[in-house]
Amino acid sequence: MKIPPEITYRFIDKTDAIDSLVHEKIGKLEQVCDHISSCHIAIEKINDRPRSGSPYRVRLDITVPPGHEIVAESNPGEGNQYDPLDAVIRNAFRAAQTQLKKLNQRQNESGKSQTHEGHETTALVVRLFRDQGYGFIRGLDGQEFYFHRNSVLHDDFDRLEVGTGVRFVSDFNDGEQGPHASTVQIVDKPGHRAGEAEETLIEPPLGWQ
Image (cartoon, rainbow, N blue to C red):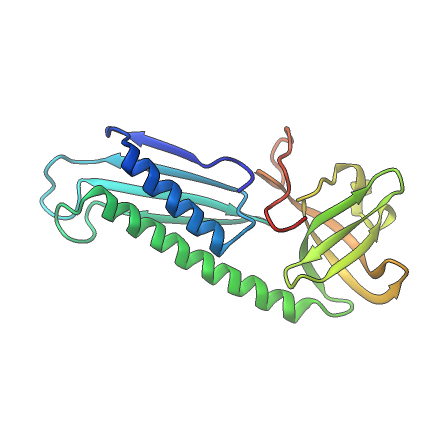
């Protein structure tokens, strides 16, 4: 995860045991999806003695390139009465992990079905050579494509960074640099959604270098 996860505690004391559990579960999420952009975790106490369910609520808001949002929540009214906080945390992370697995599957299937000549697909920038005016992007199936600055729409080559999410049209006419990509368009920057104000960019997603 290239932006450190944000963990918020509301009306509840943070303990070493809970903090350790949360970071352990974050690590499990990264094993499922190694290119998570950001993750915000809210842990709160809603009610001291609820009539049903747990007094705790845990919510995860996760973003994944090139613009996916995942929300997983364990609510006070769900599950057994007075479920302890660690159980509520595990439930929320389990729900997030399930969603990430489904997203990975959809992305992999999309990458395999769309990475054909003349079809548009998504990828991340993995290498840039600004002075020479070219770079390389990697599709969801692991295939890498060379692209020239002239192939980047809207003269956006100088806006690209390693880790930027793009859409492109594949061209399997190999040159010296391998398969080529054309019609490259920015769809997401690391750490924020496309269209938001551009601030300091983060490092590329894990495993995409």
